[in-house]
Length: 418
Image (cartoon, rainbow, N blue to C red):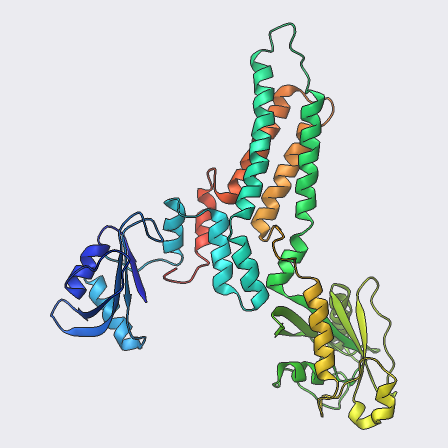
């Protein structure tokens, strides 16, 4: 599908398809270039302004997807003097500038395009439903209400009966709003997990089967596996889709007394990485040749016995999580447990969470300004200015105030044609 947007969109349909079909109705047409040669036969749609994705007059050409067909169509379009290829994200940027969507909607659309799992898709759909804009708009209106009350007091500050400090009820409202913003910010880690993935680290002594487990999960050769201790010396990462949730599994160097500087660095990275994980799988072989390591402090851990094909079923039966990467025994159960742990960390459906670092930074700014506005010993003029700054920070999240410096960074991440 090739989309065009701008005042010449209808004329482009007329040039290539002969006639412009009724608005928003698909029509089967033969598309021809300026020399009358047939490009393809396909579907044409026309969207008069402002009832289109961008708010401008738009047209779409649905053709067969071969490279030669698409190149010929683009070539015919670009021969028109007023036509050029769109920049990445330009259609969405025009939709924002024409009031068709907020910045929050635009960012949610970008996440939807990039979604790799069902959880990411659902999260992006929910984020694009307008609930964030409603919440931040409500907070901004509350700040403006309090700010306006302070400004009114300043306007009549020369009157003898006007107090020069903030009324107790307004102070209570500011403190309560700061608390709501702070609580809202605490959900960012959950939102980040949906996109970055639930963080799982494999940890154990050398040759306990960490790399074999990683390869089994990937169903391909991701890590080198040998009988030589210390084969894995760096972090090897694998991203999986487990029951609709993104899970990031990291293989690490075997923990032992290092035999050289390179292995020492790899072991240090393994320990550090495990301390930051959301779940650590501690591995030890069923034959008892190595013991389970001490779990990292404060990290959820599962003890997994490996190589049960070599030790026999009797040994495996003594352990809750026992696997063989050779026969596949125990792997489905382990995967189900990991998937369950990952799903438990997902946000609940309908939960409104900050999901972009840009939002978090602006929310933190707003909270800091609110804290300054209700600090003891601060004059009304300073309180008023801090409330104005807090309202502006919230407004920038949805693009309600000047955000020109952000637009290039946001829309350049989109793909061409979106």
